[in-house]
Image 1 (tube, rainbow, N blue to C red):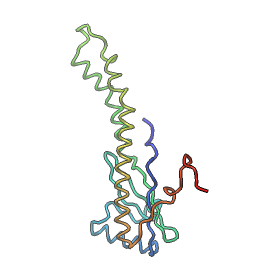
Image 2: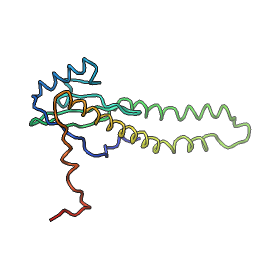
Image 3: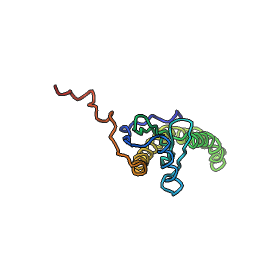
Image 4: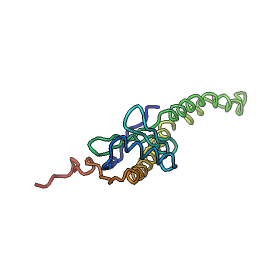
Length: 176
C-alpha cells in the first residue's frame, strides 16, 4: 500500500479578482457562515485559505493562494481516512483466515486454509487500492472545479483557464 498517487488530470483554473487577500478571506468567511462555502478555513498552515473538495471515498482540500490579483489553486487529498482504511485492510486479513479456518476445519482433509485464502484476499489489494485512489482523485477534482466556480462568484472574479493547459504537448509540433 503505497502513498496516494499524484493527481493526473488537467491543471485547475485560476481566478482573476480585484480584491486583496484580506478582502477575499472576509468574503469567503461570510459565504461559509451562510452555508455557501463548505469546509472553509481562513488561516490554514499553507495558502491563503482552504475549502473542502469532497471525494468518494476519500476527501480532499482545495488550497487557494493569492498573488498579483490572481487566485491559484492546488488540490491535496486528506491523508487520515486513507491511512485508517489501509490499516484496517491489512489488519483484517489474518483474522479472516482464522474465522474461515473455523468454518472449514482441517479435520475434513482439505488443503490448508491459508493456501487459498491468502491469495484470494491479499492479491486483489493493490488493484483495489489503485481503483479507490483513481475514483477519489476524479471526484475530488470535480468537486474542486465546482468550488472554484463558487469562489469566483463570491469574490466577483473571472475564471481563467490554467496557462499549463494551453501549452502544446511535446508530441504536437509547434506552428512556425
